Image (cartoon, rainbow, N blue to C red; front, side, top):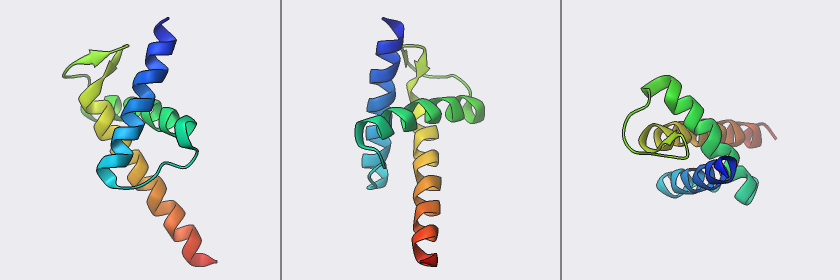
Length: 84
């Protein structure tokens, strides 16, 4: 049951990060889940584990990490489209 909660929280974190930046995450729901989980890992490395946590994911660092991840991915995608 723990991994289902992790997937749900990861999806919500990825979705919120996309909303905050005003950018769509490529891949829809799966992209949101991946962005949320990788963002949680990245946020944990950069900011540590503080604030409330759900499903072993600290919400604030996960959201900050997902925002950073989506910003970097959108920047890379934008530069790749310019080269064409």
